[in-house]
Image 1 (cartoon, rainbow, N blue to C red):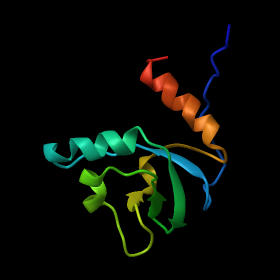
Image 2: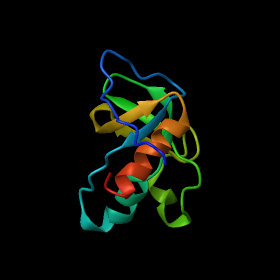
Image 3: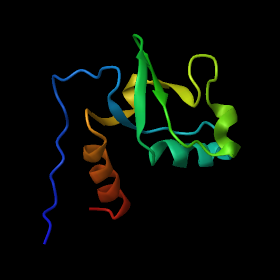
Image 4: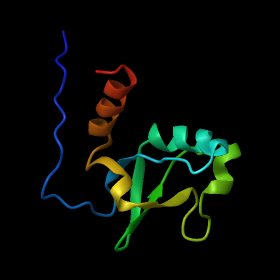
Amino acid sequence: MRYIKEFEKKTNVEISRGDYVLMNYTPSHKTLIDLSNFINNTIGIVSKISDDFIYVKYDAVPITLQRFFDKTNEINCRMMYIEDIVDFAKSKEELELKLQANKYNL
């Protein structure tokens, strides 16, 4: 039987370009619920970091949501607030475990 990995909050660790991130996006309008569901349940890659914002690149963005993503810097890239980061890691597998745990309320 597999054990359940305990997730810890990262302290004293800074996010860097190329890290994988899970974001918590709260929509400003009820029509953006599909966008919120996509961002909250998809692992992105940090492509650029500024003082208050990060640019997160997502793979396989649905066609219906592509209008919400920036196409000037990189395709399927979205500017997000740094405080919206739920978790980040150097490897995608760590965040996939967290997504699965959240999916099954573990």
